Image (tube, rainbow, N blue to C red; front, side):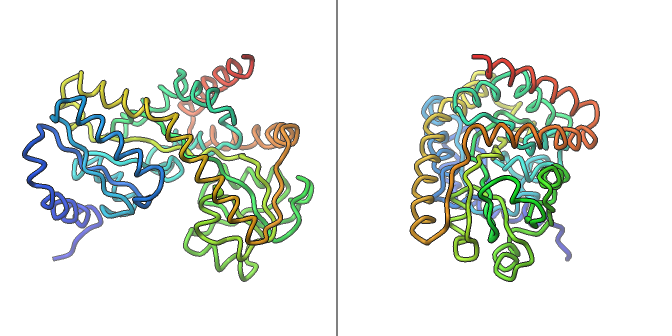
Length: 340
């Protein structure tokens, strides 16, 4: 018998759910929630916290069983599994969902989110954020929230002391037209490579540099094969919390509200935890000899002005009228928080 990707995750989900039969009998609603990060990382730690709070606040009637580190499949399998009801929920990086829902690729646009955490949260809570979440309903899932997961930074084996020095350099990107346009606007070139190929590509000079969060740079030991790092905070890493609609709608409205509110409530602590991990990662990176500099606010504004128009146009070309509406809502929200 030949198993498809979806049937494989179905079997895996059934096997794993069998391990928690005793606890499942105690709760009226049990959700298997899969994601890719390890058990020790921020996403998993705060999913466990949400699970505990939701269970308490529903008098034990809602239980989340969290499966980190791809135990239920890769992200595509988990997203499709959530859509089909093989599992009840997943928390996915937005960057992995562009093929599933092109509208969410708006989050790939550089400098979309302000560094100020309150301003960034105001944008997530705005009409833009609500419309972005609503865009998932047509794809057969319920998006109940956005979770911040840090920012991307630039590294390279060539000098990056000024933005002009990016000219002619080759950078690895995920498969995203928006990110390709980002580097074009910087007079650099972008090569799409899988994450697993990146270390060797840097080591062998296939690409000069890359972009990733500091904790990823530290964890993957890119400091071993990269000389220079600029803390630019140019790319917001956002997670999307997705539920299966049948499961979601089977719960009473007050339980759904508790879940949404609890995911939202822990965001400040999640942001603080992530910041502490990033700071620790930066210390490790410095100790291992990378040349580190922090881009000034003026540099960031200059870079945003240079690359925002091109990346916005690339996004709208792909996402169409829905994308144009989201960008308009975003720009209204950004103007509002920037004026405060």
